[in-house]
Length: 213
Image (tube, rainbow, N blue to C red; front, side):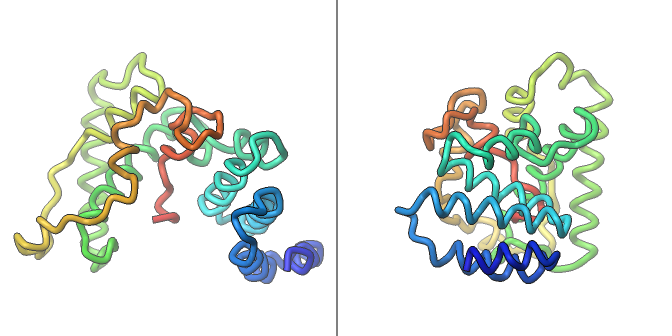
């Protein structure tokens, strides 16, 4: 399946390659780390060609964890910023997207299905997040801080979101964290807990793009 996916890429059919390479990833056992890393790398290439950059970064992130030294890690580090997200043209945009994605993900975590129920809900939540960002930028809270320090601030910042019809019982629903509580407590500047050798903020503790949620 990997060879078939590479043939599709060679024929400039990345959409077909993605389908095959995803099947190849699912069929490769975790014990075959080198082969799995290689397959994930080529899946990221196909995703980049279709401009699905957030998913490509996610695939590269998984590939580089399996092999500390290799082309996947070099490509990953070349394409990400200090938050482990796709690198933006300016540092200010890096901060903006990190803050926005963290707050949107925090809101969706309250939802039973982890998604917006309407376009109006999404626009209202986004407007609240943007207003919060404007207030932050109007002050000097982020001045002279590196990405790791900003990341801690972003994760602890809690805008006041409306309930959008959620009753009290739904708002108090507790979901399984699957390690997210460990991510919240970890020091972003320290080496990642998975043993990849990268800072936590650029590996398992990286900020996920909205396309990954």
